[in-house]
Image (cartoon, rainbow over all chains, first blue to last red; front, top):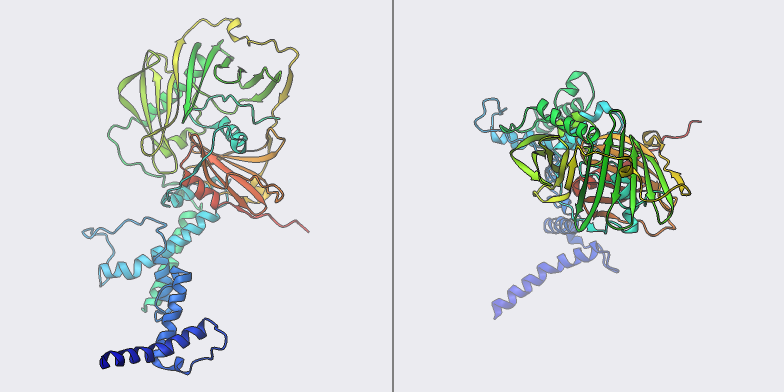
Length: 188
Length: 346
C-alpha cells in the first residue's frame, strides 16, 4: 500500500510540470510560464505537446521536430499521394543506375528527386494554357500518368432544369451514340 | 558530395528534364506518342481507318429507312429516320416517336427542328455527324487515344449480319465503344459506349432498317404544314476564351475543337469550349457568377444519364464541365482551370 502511494506521489510530481506547461501553451488565464520548461524534461514535453498539436491540426506536419528542415520537406513530399507512377527499377536490369549502396541509393537519393520532379511536372500540367496546339503532346505525357481518384457523382435527372440546357447543348457534338434529342431546351 | 547538394542537383536535373519534355522545342517534342500495349488481334491501322471511313461514307451516301432506339440509363427513345442521297446532296427526315412530337429535316448541313406545339422552326447548322453517321473530330486522335480491333465473329443487328468493332481506350480518361457496321453496306447499325468495368453506358441501334430503299418526296415531307410557323435561327457566336484569360489544361489526348457563345432557353448567355479526343467530347460552360442567384447546381460532381458533370466557381465565374467521360477526369480538369485576365493596356 505504501509502495502504491509512493508511485502515486511520483506520478503526480511528474505530471504537475507537464500540466503547467500544457496550461501555459493553451494560454490558460493566470498560468505563468513554468520555470521547468527550460529543463531537459520540460523541453521534451514542450516539443511533444507541439507535435501533438501539429498532428491534430495538420497530419502532414507530424514529423519529429528533431529532423532537419530539408529532411522534413523531402519526407513531406515523399508522403504526398503519388502523382507520377515511376517505373520501379528492375533489380536484374543491367542498365539500372546503382550507387555504392544499390537500393539504398534509389531510396534516399533518386526517389525524393523524382517526387520533386513530379511536383514540377504537376505544376507544368496545371499551368499549361490551352489552345496552344504545339503543347498538346507534352501535356498528354504529363497528364497521362496522373492517377485518378474515384469520384462519386450525385444523380441528376436528364431533364432536370439545372442541367438540361447544358446537357442538350453539349450533346450536339458528342460521340458515336449521338442522336437528335427530343428537347429543344437549348434555344430561346 | 553532401546529401543536401546531391539532392539539390537531382531536383534541378529532374526539373530540367521535366521542363524539356514539356517544352515544344524541336521535333523531339512530337516524337513520343502514347504507346499502346501490343495486341496480336489488333487490326492493321490502315484497315481500321478504311472501315471507319466506309461507315461515314455509308451514312451519307446510302438511301435507307429505319427505326433506331436510343437508350441511356432509364431513358429510352426511338426515332424513324429516312435518308436520301441524290449523288450530290443529302436529305434526311427524323421523326421522334416517343414523348413530345418533334421532327428534324436536314439538307446537307442545314437542319430544321420542328416544334408543332409552339409552331416553331429552329434553324441551325449541323455540328458533327449523328447516328448512323460517326462523329470523328480527328482521325489521328482516334488512333492515338484508342486501340481499334475487329470482333472475331460476325454479329446480327436488326436482322442483318454486321461486323463488330471494338474501340478500347488507351488510358482512364475516356470510355470505350463497340460498333457494329452492316456487312454488306457498312452502314452503322449499332453503337455502344462502354465504361471501364465493361458496363454499357449508352447505346443506339437500329431495330429495323431497309438499306437501298426507294425514297419518295412524300417520305421526306414533314407531318405538319409549317407555312405560318415562326422560324428562329440558333446563333453561335465565336469567342476567344484564351484572350479572355482562361487557362484550361486539356486532359491527356483531348484538343480544343470549338469555342462559342450559346444562348439557353432562359436567354442566359454562356460561353462553351469543346474538347475532343476524336470520339469523346467535353464541354466547359462559363458564365458570370451572380451572388444574388442561389441555384448554382450541381456543385461538385454529378451525373445525368451517361453525362458526368462538375460544377465549380472560379473567380467570379460559374463553370459547368460535362461530358461522356469518367467523372475523375472531369473533376481533375475542372479543378485545374484558372482565370488569369490580362491587365488593361494603359
